Image 1 (tube, rainbow over the protein chains, first blue to last red):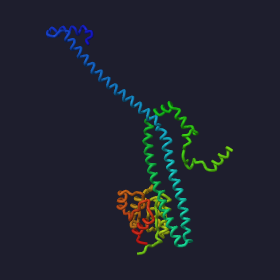
Image 2 (image 1 turned 135 degrees about the vertical axis):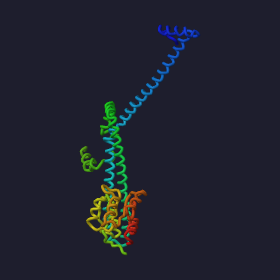
Image 3 (image 1 turned 120 degrees about the vertical axis):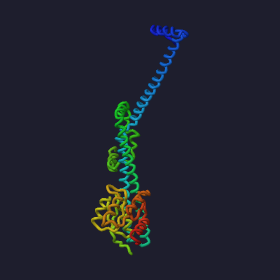
Length: 217
Length: 128
């Protein structure tokens, strides 16, 4: 669609018409206007497409940052991984203690074989040997758990980098979601009461539990 | 040639329960002179301080591993012919090859049983 034509352009078109009389001024004006219009249209479309892509990318980054912050990688660093490694260490410790107890009992039993009838002594020794062999498990499980702990340490270092990169977003998320913090802090919620076995240092002793129960009477 | 049942044996493992198991099984087989070390460097020190006739060592220990201990033993003029059995959960082919190349006399994979221990001992020190 042709708009108002500037006077300077009209003058130039008039001069052109004198050199090329077969074209009318209106025809030339129409061609030029359409060409300009077409060029402007192409440029704007390209710019708009590019702008839309950049905007979409920016939105994606903002969303991704929010989602990563919502995952609370700082909690993985401060709570989950240290807790997991402590639990695994406790497994190694408790299986070692139990295995030593079993071995102690077997050694005591084996020491009595000298007082037994030979046939009985032989049977007892066979059974004790089987227990010794079975106690191999403690070493094997210990080594497997050590491998898992190493893997957790590796994950911890990666999460550490994530926390460093998204520190501001995590702080922002925490300030925007105070309820999540409060729920974690309530030690009497059903979820918080599902703790499983306690680590040796923090486990309640039977005497303490009995005393606590007695305090309700 | 008969086996000297009074021979000194050094067992090396970082798990105390495993040391206890091996010691008890050796005792059942008639070997009572058994000392313990919890890593390669402690074992090497004991080997240099006292005469031993056999080493039974784990692989995965810190700071000195079983394979490092084996290499130290084979590089030591006084210890280089000492019978050495590796007893380990490391069961990859590469491990066995590395141990063989380092000069191990035999190799027991954990978990093991008393019969395997006896067979491997016999192959290294002779029937008993």
